[in-house]
Image 1 (cartoon, rainbow, N blue to C red):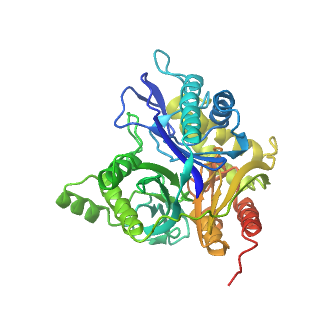
Image 2: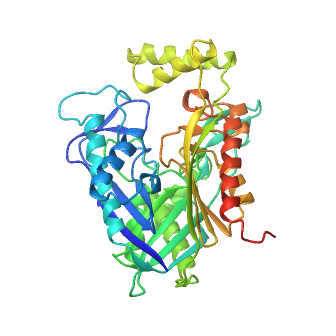
Image 3: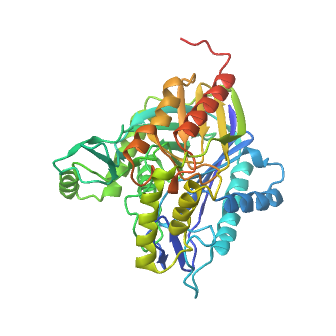
Amino acid sequence: MLNVGWASRDLTPARPVLLMGQMHARVAHTALDPITVTALAVEDVVLVSCDVVAISEGLRQATLDILRRLQPQISASKVILAATHTHDSLVFDEGFYTHPGGEVMTAAECTAFAAGIVAEAIAAAWQARTPSPVARAFGHAVVGHNRYAVYADDSGAMYGKTNRPDFRHFGGYEDHGVDMLFTWDGQGRLAGVLLAIPCPSQVDEHLSQLSADYWHEVRLELRRRLGPQVQVLGWCAPAGDQSPHFLLYGQQEAEMRRRRGVSERQEIAQRVADAVERALVCTPPDTGTPVFRHVTRLLHLTPFAVSARDIPWAQARYDEWVAANKETVSWWPTRLQQVIDTAQGRRRPEPVATRIHVLRLGDLGIATNPFELFLDYGLRLKARSPAGQTLLAQLADGCGWYLPSERAVRAGSYGAAPVVCPVGPEGGGELVEETLSILEELFSDQKQE
């Protein structure tokens, strides 16, 4: 058996906060539901999930600084912080939005507040480690959908209308797979489950309240079915072009939810819980001691190839923003100006430092990246991985913004333009190959079919 420990903590602040996730600033004075941190310690590695948009470098470093004092035997390189990508959580980067003043917490205050709680959860999970059975499993739950409509001229639009005469197809694949890792306690009770779902938590992404989005309902539903002691660690698998929003079937789905008397988030939770229950009933605890190995590596990926063709799009949106908002210092106009400066040769992009983690747990491979990674890359990794099952997490140990596929860049639209994409398809290929190379090393003793 492996030494395993769980812990979770409430990350909901008492004071008003700016909410991360949209172009415009929003302020939350209340919480619709708790935002949380959940930590799973396995041997000398700690896997963490936070109900935030992304893991800023400031939050990561502040968490590790506190952790050194709380539990100095935990190596910083063995801590993996990942975000569920709710759009209704704390802002950690100063200057991302214009601060409204008053009682609203600053980004520095949010960072200090969250880092202390995250570090406490990590330390508690570490201290709770006991020999525990573990087992992997796989299932399906319809959660995410491709969010790009592509038209007759091959252009794409995020959340584009599909009832247009020139609508032709969606911009990519959808993945309804759910990767799971179960652990049990010494009495044989289910202790917790790690779930990787290829969809950000963005059912309600325009709130003026704090919220964990659909992960809150998933936790409630799983504890209702499996016991109040069950910990739920949610990771967002590669889903840069995915969303819980429907571009087709939205009307029919809403009608069926009304008939069943459930919200959209409750519908998702029931689907996920169904998948977990079906997998659990045929997944016995493994009381053996599986191989456990961990590698972390810092890559330097080729940056997005910005050119003069990107100037008109960026300039038009910059001018629109300034005319409407009378400011140039928040994140959106700042990044648009960076694209223009790069295309005109005034700014030279450097290779993008990218931290990844790759683990082997028995015949389960686990790999992380810091991007909103388009699904195509996740599918390439899974298809070529030597592991019996491969569990992937995006938005881990960094805020890498989007990493779009080649076909997405050709179609254009938000999420596939350099304003939010420091790394493009060339760097995406490098990420895939480097991750696969490490997986091959970790599974080199297994015979390939």
